[in-house]
Image (cartoon, rainbow, N blue to C red; front, side):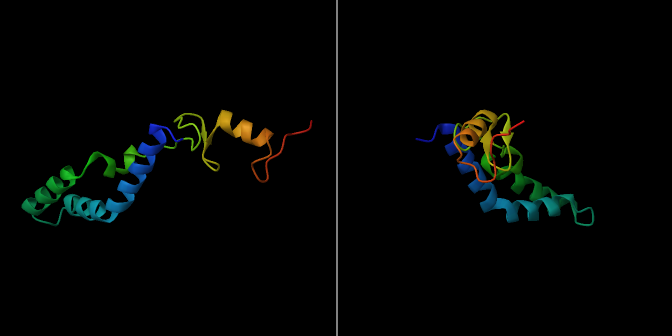
Length: 100
């Protein structure tokens, strides 16, 4: 059963993906110095009307198993501890225990 952190992370990523093009268009209009101030102001207001889960800065790397937000190994999407457990169990392709 996934915990709430994982479910929230999935919802955030979906929201960012769904609104990415519109946010970038409004942001480009708001930052364009050649446009009239009224147009730039309206674009900024539209940016402010987007929800919280549409901002790309809200997305964090989270462990797909435990939902932890710290110590995540990006290539595998697992926290350090979950990575270690999966590697010792032989569940990760190309990863094996070192023999010194």
